[in-house]
Structure formats: C-alpha cells, structure tokens
Length: 94
Image 1 (cartoon, helix red, strand yellow):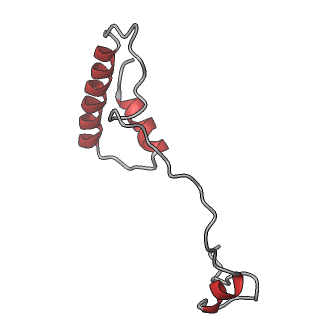
Image 2 (cartoon, rainbow, N blue to C red; image 1 turned 180 degrees about the horizontal axis):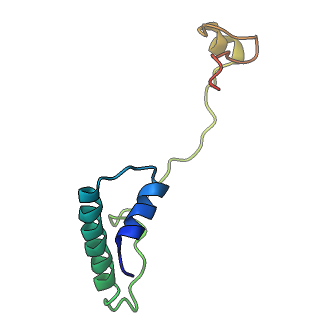
C-alpha cells in the first residue's frame, strides 16, 4: 500500500482534523514507516505459535459469586438528593 498525500488527507478528514501541509508530509512519512514495520512482521514464520491470551502465565481467576447482604431500596434512596420513591432522579443530559 502506498501512502500519498491524498490518503493522509482522507484519514485526516475522517478524523475531523485540519492539517497544515508540513504536518501532512510528516504524517505521510510516519504512516509509511508504520506500514513497513507491519510488513516486516508479516515475514515471520508463525506456524505452531499459539495466540497469546494473557501477557503473564497466570490466567485471570475470578472470585466465586456469593449471596451476601444487599442494600434495600429505601436505604439506597435515603441519601439521594432527589428520587421518586423507586429511582434516583438526575439532571437531563440530552
């Protein structure tokens, strides 16, 4: 894949960026080096290499779920600045 100014400007447009001409040239060089590096990785022989699931040898162990004390609705709403008896009321975000 060749990286030209049109590709850099298209990517900038998709990212909603305005780039000066000097920055376009710099990004063109950066993208070319990144693609060259990825192409170099494609030369590796990965037959028989298992995909890496975790960075360390230890797999993530989750604690077992246990039923415990729960907070009833009235207690949960008792500290709320505003509620309707069943739910918290918050300012409209939209």
